[in-house]
Image (cartoon, rainbow, N blue to C red):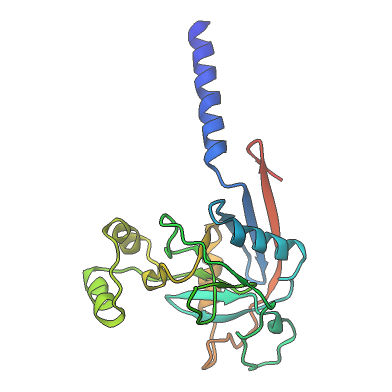
Length: 223
Protein backbone atom coordinates (compact mmCIF):
# COMPACT_ATOMS: atom_id res chain seq x y z
CA UNK A 1 0.00 0.00 0.00
CA UNK A 2 2.88 2.34 0.75
CA UNK A 3 4.22 1.85 -2.81
CA UNK A 4 0.81 2.64 -4.24
CA UNK A 5 0.62 5.81 -2.17
CA UNK A 6 4.04 6.87 -3.42
CA UNK A 7 2.98 6.20 -7.00
CA UNK A 8 -0.20 8.25 -6.58
CA UNK A 9 1.77 11.06 -4.97
CA UNK A 10 4.30 10.98 -7.82
CA UNK A 11 1.55 11.13 -10.46
CA UNK A 12 -0.15 13.98 -8.60
CA UNK A 13 3.13 15.89 -8.33
CA UNK A 14 3.80 15.41 -12.05
CA UNK A 15 0.29 16.61 -12.87
CA UNK A 16 0.69 19.72 -10.74
CA UNK A 17 4.11 20.41 -12.29
CA UNK A 18 2.66 20.21 -15.80
CA UNK A 19 -0.22 22.47 -14.79
CA UNK A 20 2.18 25.00 -13.29
CA UNK A 21 4.35 25.02 -16.43
CA UNK A 22 1.45 25.37 -18.87
CA UNK A 23 0.41 28.78 -20.14
CA UNK A 24 -2.73 30.24 -18.57
CA UNK A 25 -4.51 31.28 -21.77
CA UNK A 26 -5.26 29.96 -25.22
CA UNK A 27 -6.91 31.65 -28.18
CA UNK A 28 -8.90 30.04 -30.96
CA UNK A 29 -9.08 31.98 -34.22
CA UNK A 30 -12.17 30.98 -36.18
CA UNK A 31 -11.79 31.62 -39.93
CA UNK A 32 -13.58 30.75 -43.14
CA UNK A 33 -10.94 28.07 -43.73
CA UNK A 34 -11.06 26.50 -40.25
CA UNK A 35 -9.72 27.13 -36.76
CA UNK A 36 -6.26 27.98 -35.43
CA UNK A 37 -5.54 27.30 -31.74
CA UNK A 38 -2.71 29.18 -30.04
CA UNK A 39 -1.19 29.39 -26.60
CA UNK A 40 -0.52 32.89 -25.26
CA UNK A 41 2.71 33.30 -23.31
CA UNK A 42 2.59 34.43 -19.69
CA UNK A 43 6.06 36.01 -19.95
CA UNK A 44 4.69 38.63 -22.37
CA UNK A 45 1.78 39.89 -20.25
CA UNK A 46 1.27 43.24 -21.99
CA UNK A 47 0.78 41.67 -25.41
CA UNK A 48 -1.12 38.70 -24.02
CA UNK A 49 -3.57 40.83 -22.06
CA UNK A 50 -4.07 43.28 -24.92
CA UNK A 51 -4.89 40.44 -27.33
CA UNK A 52 -7.28 38.91 -24.80
CA UNK A 53 -8.99 42.26 -24.21
CA UNK A 54 -9.56 42.89 -27.91
CA UNK A 55 -10.75 39.34 -28.54
CA UNK A 56 -13.24 39.53 -25.65
CA UNK A 57 -14.47 42.87 -26.95
CA UNK A 58 -15.03 41.09 -30.29
CA UNK A 59 -12.82 43.66 -31.99
CA UNK A 60 -11.41 41.05 -34.38
CA UNK A 61 -14.79 39.77 -35.52
CA UNK A 62 -15.07 40.22 -39.27
CA UNK A 63 -11.56 41.53 -39.86
CA UNK A 64 -9.35 40.16 -42.63
CA UNK A 65 -6.00 38.53 -42.95
CA UNK A 66 -5.09 41.41 -45.23
CA UNK A 67 -1.45 40.52 -45.94
CA UNK A 68 -0.21 37.04 -46.83
CA UNK A 69 3.27 36.15 -48.06
CA UNK A 70 4.22 32.52 -48.82
CA UNK A 71 7.15 31.18 -46.80
CA UNK A 72 6.76 34.16 -44.47
CA UNK A 73 3.52 34.97 -42.62
CA UNK A 74 -0.18 35.88 -42.54
CA UNK A 75 -1.15 39.22 -40.99
CA UNK A 76 -4.47 40.53 -39.68
CA UNK A 77 -5.99 42.96 -37.21
CA UNK A 78 -6.34 46.13 -39.30
CA UNK A 79 -9.66 47.70 -38.18
CA UNK A 80 -10.08 49.22 -41.65
CA UNK A 81 -10.31 45.74 -43.16
CA UNK A 82 -13.76 44.99 -41.80
CA UNK A 83 -15.53 47.01 -44.48
CA UNK A 84 -12.71 47.22 -47.02
CA UNK A 85 -13.59 47.28 -50.69
CA UNK A 86 -11.95 44.82 -53.11
CA UNK A 87 -8.41 45.90 -53.88
CA UNK A 88 -8.32 48.54 -51.14
CA UNK A 89 -4.84 48.99 -49.68
CA UNK A 90 -4.77 47.92 -46.04
CA UNK A 91 -2.26 47.85 -43.23
CA UNK A 92 -2.29 51.38 -41.80
CA UNK A 93 -5.34 51.02 -39.55
CA UNK A 94 -4.79 50.90 -35.80
CA UNK A 95 -6.24 51.89 -32.42
CA UNK A 96 -4.14 54.92 -31.52
CA UNK A 97 -1.76 53.37 -29.01
CA UNK A 98 1.33 51.17 -28.95
CA UNK A 99 2.59 48.34 -26.77
CA UNK A 100 6.10 48.38 -25.28
CA UNK A 101 8.31 45.67 -26.73
CA UNK A 102 8.52 42.44 -24.72
CA UNK A 103 11.48 40.47 -26.01
CA UNK A 104 11.98 37.10 -24.31
CA UNK A 105 14.99 35.07 -25.56
CA UNK A 106 13.14 31.74 -25.53
CA UNK A 107 10.41 33.10 -27.82
CA UNK A 108 11.49 33.56 -31.42
CA UNK A 109 10.04 33.49 -34.93
CA UNK A 110 9.81 29.77 -35.55
CA UNK A 111 6.98 28.37 -37.63
CA UNK A 112 3.65 28.99 -35.89
CA UNK A 113 4.85 31.93 -33.78
CA UNK A 114 2.27 34.60 -32.95
CA UNK A 115 3.80 38.08 -33.00
CA UNK A 116 2.72 41.70 -33.14
CA UNK A 117 3.26 43.90 -36.17
CA UNK A 118 4.55 47.45 -35.83
CA UNK A 119 5.52 50.53 -37.76
CA UNK A 120 9.08 51.80 -37.93
CA UNK A 121 9.85 53.23 -34.49
CA UNK A 122 13.14 53.21 -32.55
CA UNK A 123 11.66 51.63 -29.41
CA UNK A 124 10.23 48.76 -31.48
CA UNK A 125 6.84 49.29 -29.88
CA UNK A 126 4.07 47.11 -31.24
CA UNK A 127 0.83 47.90 -33.00
CA UNK A 128 -2.19 47.81 -30.73
CA UNK A 129 -4.15 45.42 -32.92
CA UNK A 130 -2.23 44.04 -35.89
CA UNK A 131 -0.70 40.59 -35.43
CA UNK A 132 0.84 37.92 -37.61
CA UNK A 133 1.42 34.18 -37.58
CA UNK A 134 4.72 32.93 -38.97
CA UNK A 135 4.54 30.35 -41.76
CA UNK A 136 8.22 30.65 -42.57
CA UNK A 137 10.62 28.40 -44.40
CA UNK A 138 13.45 26.03 -43.49
CA UNK A 139 17.06 27.17 -43.54
CA UNK A 140 20.29 25.36 -44.30
CA UNK A 141 23.85 26.64 -43.91
CA UNK A 142 23.62 28.42 -47.25
CA UNK A 143 20.47 30.15 -46.05
CA UNK A 144 22.18 31.26 -42.87
CA UNK A 145 25.10 32.58 -44.92
CA UNK A 146 22.75 34.66 -47.09
CA UNK A 147 20.99 36.04 -44.01
CA UNK A 148 24.33 37.23 -42.70
CA UNK A 149 25.45 38.72 -46.01
CA UNK A 150 22.20 40.37 -47.09
CA UNK A 151 20.55 41.27 -43.78
CA UNK A 152 23.46 41.17 -41.33
CA UNK A 153 21.53 38.58 -39.32
CA UNK A 154 23.47 35.97 -37.38
CA UNK A 155 21.24 33.14 -36.14
CA UNK A 156 22.29 31.85 -32.69
CA UNK A 157 23.51 28.26 -32.69
CA UNK A 158 20.82 27.18 -30.23
CA UNK A 159 18.10 28.24 -32.70
CA UNK A 160 19.56 26.77 -35.86
CA UNK A 161 18.16 23.28 -35.33
CA UNK A 162 14.65 24.72 -34.99
CA UNK A 163 14.98 26.93 -38.06
CA UNK A 164 16.48 24.03 -40.03
CA UNK A 165 13.88 21.41 -39.08
CA UNK A 166 10.71 23.41 -38.40
CA UNK A 167 11.43 26.66 -40.21
CA UNK A 168 10.52 30.24 -39.48
CA UNK A 169 11.59 33.83 -40.09
CA UNK A 170 14.81 34.42 -38.10
CA UNK A 171 15.44 37.89 -39.53
CA UNK A 172 12.53 39.17 -37.40
CA UNK A 173 14.03 38.04 -34.08
CA UNK A 174 14.72 40.89 -31.69
CA UNK A 175 12.65 43.29 -33.77
CA UNK A 176 9.06 42.16 -33.20
CA UNK A 177 7.50 40.79 -30.03
CA UNK A 178 6.58 37.09 -30.08
CA UNK A 179 3.85 36.32 -27.56
CA UNK A 180 2.24 33.05 -28.59
CA UNK A 181 2.53 29.83 -30.58
CA UNK A 182 0.17 27.78 -32.72
CA UNK A 183 -0.79 24.48 -31.06
CA UNK A 184 -3.20 23.23 -33.69
CA UNK A 185 -4.35 24.37 -37.11
CA UNK A 186 -1.15 25.34 -38.94
CA UNK A 187 -2.67 23.75 -42.02
CA UNK A 188 -5.25 26.54 -41.91
CA UNK A 189 -2.48 29.16 -41.90
CA UNK A 190 -0.85 27.30 -44.80
CA UNK A 191 -4.12 27.44 -46.72
CA UNK A 192 -4.58 31.16 -46.06
CA UNK A 193 -1.02 32.04 -47.06
CA UNK A 194 -1.45 30.16 -50.35
CA UNK A 195 -4.42 32.29 -51.43
CA UNK A 196 -3.90 34.20 -54.70
CA UNK A 197 -2.98 37.81 -53.89
CA UNK A 198 -2.58 41.22 -55.45
CA UNK A 199 0.56 43.35 -55.74
CA UNK A 200 0.12 44.49 -52.12
CA UNK A 201 -0.07 40.89 -50.86
CA UNK A 202 -3.76 41.17 -50.08
CA UNK A 203 -5.69 37.98 -50.94
CA UNK A 204 -7.94 38.41 -53.96
CA UNK A 205 -10.62 36.49 -52.07
CA UNK A 206 -11.15 37.81 -48.55
CA UNK A 207 -9.67 35.61 -45.81
CA UNK A 208 -11.89 36.63 -42.92
CA UNK A 209 -11.61 36.15 -39.16
CA UNK A 210 -15.04 35.13 -37.90
CA UNK A 211 -14.15 35.61 -34.25
CA UNK A 212 -11.45 34.88 -31.68
CA UNK A 213 -12.37 33.03 -28.50
CA UNK A 214 -10.23 33.04 -25.35
CA UNK A 215 -9.91 30.00 -23.11
CA UNK A 216 -8.47 30.08 -19.60
CA UNK A 217 -6.84 27.15 -17.82
CA UNK A 218 -8.33 26.18 -14.46
CA UNK A 219 -7.04 23.10 -12.61
CA UNK A 220 -5.83 21.60 -15.86
CA UNK A 221 -9.10 22.23 -17.71
CA UNK A 222 -9.68 24.77 -20.47
CA UNK A 223 -12.78 26.85 -19.87
